[in-house]
Image (cartoon, rainbow, N blue to C red; front, side):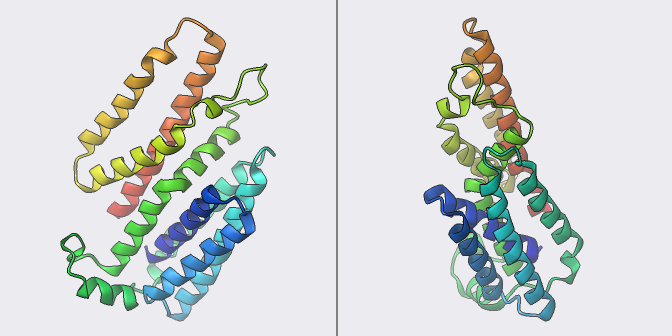
Length: 243
């Protein structure tokens, strides 16, 4: 899983950088550079690993480019296809990846941190990738799915886009995904399901309002699709960690 972990790190760094300062090409190149650096620090220096790192760098740049180009152009499915194909290829070729180690492995062995005791370099690399993805890439995936399914329509009448009204979701999404992943790793998925249910209950009064039914229907659809995609990102991450 080391190649997939490096890919996730590169994609996540790209999206995090873009959320801070939207400079698509620079952010994508930075994400690619961090991905290659992470792979080298983890000791992925065998010929097959070096080829994989070069391919991963290209995929990260392509991800950043397609995400930037898809905004408002009806091509949200393109970056989703790029990421899906890259993850599928990584899963099919994972047996060819060399074991992670290198400087990262040496640091893990010498670090006197109870939480990292017994954690392999491969596991640490994957944990880092999964955690980083929850912070910003999850939001990007949600936005792309909403656009690809035409769930929101910013030009509808004179109403503002629900996404513009619910800006707190950009912070709530990463928080709940990290919380779900953390609870899952702790073996307490029941508590994670309570978090999911609580979010629905908090929004229930607004979604059941008798006024402005057209807006409420659009908001309900937006809330449900966006929330389910966000939760799927977290659950897919847990499934990846379980493999």
